[in-house]
Length: 354
Image (cartoon, rainbow, N blue to C red):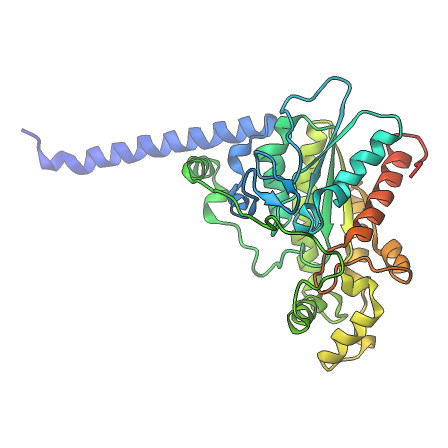
């Protein structure tokens, strides 16, 4: 008959064995991930924002993965230079597929005597920690030669006060268990635009709603925003981790800085500042770009800042869809032209023809 007096000793032995097993598992997973970075340690919750596979998006259908792109094979075709386009709703785009800057970039690269494939992996509502996760979870298996990461100045900076790591992420064992749980969840995806006729000059938001969005973002450009440097640091940590992963796989990383309309439209700037009861002298609309490009340069991360170009070209034409915060068709085209020029001059050693 079992003697209850032995129960404490049995429980103690079990606890010791379990603790030792967990320690060995944790060490083994950390060693493995050091030499073979694995997707199982990255959060896949971004899936709740992705498009529904094969859903209508204006006159286009999303592919089987819910990306706004044509179908593609996991295995890269011979002699193909593959570029992954990662980003949020800017990369996904509010314009039809044919006018999206990643689509146009691929066309321009191939017009310049090459065999290029640009895969648009943009998903609305993502931020830099999601960019890292989608690269690990879905990007690396595609064996890309380059990652073009679209960083939107308007909302991609993570607030250092609110950005708190989940406790499980400090343990590789717990992260693996979380991966198994996430794997069991089903995200059916979203119909983002549906089967509608796109109109480039139609307002998306009412005036008051659009102004409220831009008022909220104006804190990025406020000179006395003392906590913003910490936000830049928090955000940059993810970009640096992406760079480390890319370096380990011999993948070229290029970060494209996408300006907020507040930064390039003087009339909007004045309207937003006036509505807040302030003065333009208290704002510096270059602050985010200046701080981030400094850190990118120090880390030897290649980047293209579109701020000056869009600020200049805004004097000649509308580049953002009315009351929307995203680029319209001309804005997408201008971005494609400039990214194409930059890639050709910096990495492919030929001049841009378009």
